[in-house]
Length: 347
Ligand SMILES: C[S@@+](CC[C@H](N)C(=O)[O-])C[C@H]1O[C@@H](n2cnc3c(N)ncnc32)[C@H](O)[C@@H]1O
Image 1: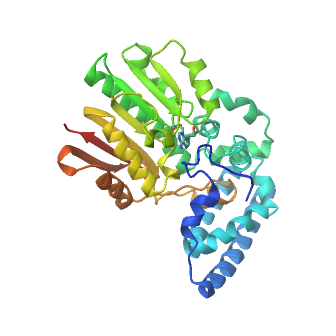
Image 2: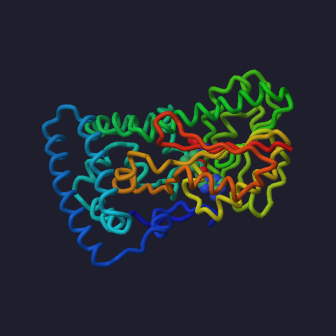
Image 3: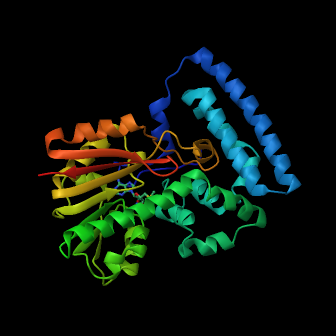
């Protein structure tokens, strides 16, 4: 795996190693067999994929096929063998081909030092901020990119951004001009670009908290003079109640819980519930355990995520709030690659 990787505040678990450490317990003998089989399967699959690449027709189709095959291999061989297969895939000569895709390369190289930075998500959003990086790619890289950013995971991420915009605008319509919103792990706050309530000046404040000073700088310059208030802060700061930021009608976190172990996720949810006004809503999103691109992401992109099931989401909801005072919901996005929870504070 590419090193060094580190988390910026020691609280988020954004290193592939730290995510995978959760899985490394397995029966040794069985594991050796599973790994051998998985290696053999990968050898066959990558051979076919490279032949399809050399033939040069329907490259996005070939990438779609490869991503599907990696998902199946991952599922079949189990977590412990898969963790051992990842560095083998990353060292394979095909990795330099896949990394001609700008999205794959950015994820693998981690220019900001950690996985899942806001610029990586900008590739998914097709944002102009990464247009130069995309333009530098080879024609083959662009063909691969055409599928990687239209794979089920990225499709779900674009829907997630639109859901966030809708939640903010609906909250503003419900509450009126006193509406206060908090985005945790805001990244570049791209969901604000399409917000009607922000454009029409119908929000009191939209606090955007992130640990990455570059992301905070981007928000500051883009949304200067609006209700958006960027804060250079962290989950750790929130847990320690270091940020005195008041209370909110809507708090949300997207692209964060995928890196947080249950203990931190539950504590953060409790803190967010405390920061809600009566009637307020907390929303958090997580990649679901039904996601389709995990094998490709974890290997060629070196981007590991904690996937969560409906039961996992409910465990966080139930451990974070007392049932009498809240209404919790768990629901999937359209293609079930991202799962959401909303918790409304009733009183
Ligand atoms: C995948 S991006 C998501 C950005 C945005 N929410 C979106 O949906 O496009 C993850 C963001 O989480 C931020 N982040 C990760 N760990 C964090 C922490 N412990 N405290 C605050 N921000 C964190 C990163 O800096 C990054 O901007």
